[in-house]
Length: 280
Ligand code: NAP
Image (cartoon, rainbow, N blue to C red; front, side, top):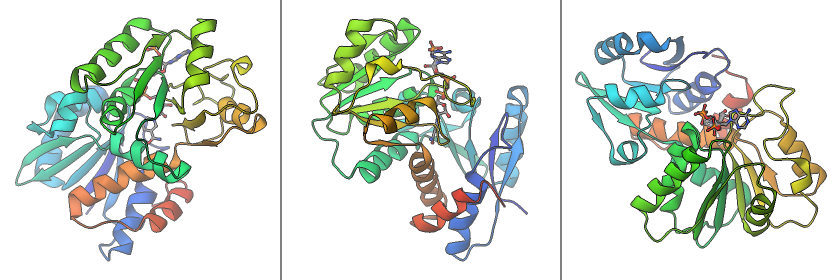
C-alpha cells in the first residue's frame, strides 16, 4: 500500500512520484509513493485519512496555505511563511513543514556554483511560491531582496515579512510596468527568481518584457517553471546565465525525503526519476 502521496488539484502533471520513488528505490525501500487528486473542499477529510494511513505527504497547488491551518503542529519555517508543502505523520500526529525555501537555496547554489552571501535577489512574483522561499533566502546572508509583482500590495506585504524576520535585509518593490524601477532593479540584481505562474501555459509571454534584457547583464535567471518558457528563451538569446525549476523541485523533494526517512537521498536517482515525467 502507498504510504506517501503527493496531492494537488490538478496533480496528474506532478513529477514527484517518479522522483520520490527513484529515491526510495535507491535506498532499498521499494516504490511506496503515489499521487491523489484532492479538491480543496476535500482537504480536511484527506487529513483524517492521512493521519491513520500515511507516513508522509507532499502538497502542491492549491493546498499549501490551507494545509498550514489544518496541521496539528508547524515547524518554525512553515509557521513563518504560513505555507506547508510537506506533512510528516507519526502516531496519528500531523506536522506541517515547508521545504521550498531550502529547495530554492540549494538549487541556486548547485545551478550557479556560488554562495549567496552578499547577493542581491530580485523576485518576479509575490504569490505562494515567493512567500514560501523569500523569507528563507532572506536568512541566507543575502544583502537585498526585492520584488516585482503585478499586485503591489502583495509584494509590499511579503517584503515587510522578510524585514520583520530579518531586519538587516534591504530591498524595494515595483510593478512590472514601472519602466525605470524595473530596469534599475534588474541591472543591480545578482539573481532574478521568476516565481509567477506566467509561463505555465505554452503560449504565455515573459512576465517581464523582452526590452529589459540585453547581452552582458550580470543577473542570473532562475525560472521556477521547469518546462520551456518565453523568459528562458530571452535569457538564452541574450547569453544570460539561467536555469529552470527542475533542481528546485528535486531539492525540496530531497529535503522531504530526508525528513521522512532520515536518509540522504540519491540525488542522481531523483534527477533520473524526474526525467521519466512522473512515471511510477
Ligand atoms: P500563486 O500563489 O497563484 O501566485 C501567482 C503569482 O503569479 C503571483 O505573483 C501573481 O501576481 C502572478 N501572476 C499570475 N498571473 C499573472 C499575470 N497574468 N501577469 C502578471 N503576474 C501574474 O502561484 P504560486 O504557487 O506562487 O506559483 C508560482 C510559480 O512557482 C508557478 O509557476 C509554479 O510552477 C512555480 N513553483 C515551482 C516550484 C518548483 O519546485 N520548481 C515550486 C513551487 C512553485 P498577483 O499577485 O498580481 O496576482
